[in-house]
Length: 359
Image (cartoon, rainbow, N blue to C red; front, side):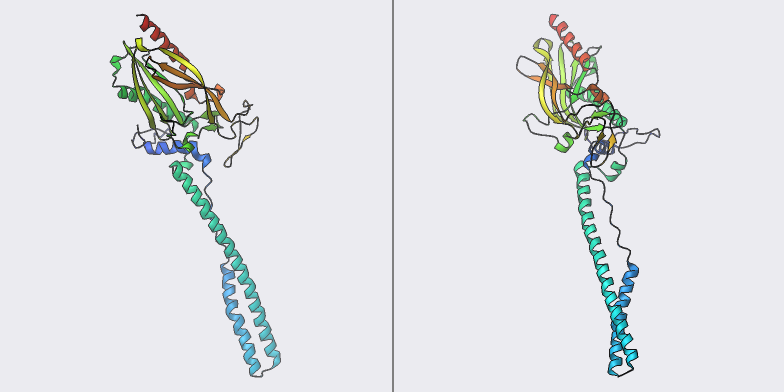
C-alpha cells in the first residue's frame, strides 16, 4: 500500500471520486491543520494617489512661484506684487515638504507590513510543505465521520488482502469459522526495530481531539493480523501511518500450535503526549487557531498517556510478536475504531490454542 496508488472513494452523495493522493492530503489536513498558521492577508497599498499628485504639483509650483518673486525683485517691480509671490511660493514649498513626509511614512509602514506579510507567508507555505498538503485541502477538511470511514477501509484492506499476500495464504487454508483476528491499537511509541524514530515527529504526535463528537483520533496505528489454520498460527504485524497509507516495519510469523508458549497481556509504561491542552473542565479547547466548547462530560485534565496494555504472542525461541490493545484513557473519548471488541478476539485465539494443544 502506497500513497501513490489510485483508487476511488466516495465523499458525498454525488459520488465524487478522489484519488488516493487527494484522500491522503485531506487526512493530513484533518490531523495537521491546527499546526498550520492562518494564511496571512496581503497588506493593501496606501490609497494616496491624489496626495502624490498634489505633492508633484507643489514640488513644481512652489519653486516656480518663488523664482517669479525673486525675478520680480530683480526687476524692481511693485513690492505689493513681490511679497505675495514669495510668501505663496514658500507656503506651497513648505506644504509640499509636509506632504512628502506623510507619503514617506505611509510608504515605510506599507513596506514594513509587506516584509511582515512575506515572513508570515513563508511560514505558512513551509507548514504546508511540511505536511505535504495544498491550500485547497485546508478548505476541504473532511469530517470526523469521513476520517473514520477511510480508516475502516484501510484496516479492512490490511486484514483481508495485504496480510494474506504477505503470508502467501489463501482463504481455503484457513479454518472456516472466525479464522482471522485483527488485533490493533494506536501507535504510541515512535521506534523501529533499532529503537530509532521512523515517522516524522510532527505526524506521529498529531493526535486530534475533535470537538464535534468529543473523540480523540490517532494518526498512526500498530496491528497484528492472526490467521488460524488447521496446524498453525500465522501472523502479520506492522506499524501503519494513516496520514500516508504507509506500512512500516512489516513482519510475518508462522508458528505451529505446539510451539506457542503463551498468549498474554502485559501493562507497559509509555509517554505519549496528547494535544495541548487536551481536556479542560467545562471550558474552551484553547488553540492559536480556534476555540470551541468542550462536551460537559469531560471533567479531567490529562496531558499524556502513560500506561498501555500489550498483547504478546511468544514462542520457545524467545521470539515474540506484540501490539498495544488498550490505553489508560476513558473509552468514551476514543474514536470508534479503538473499540473493536479486541478482548473477544484474544479470548477466541486462547481457546483455539488450548483446543489444538490438547488434540
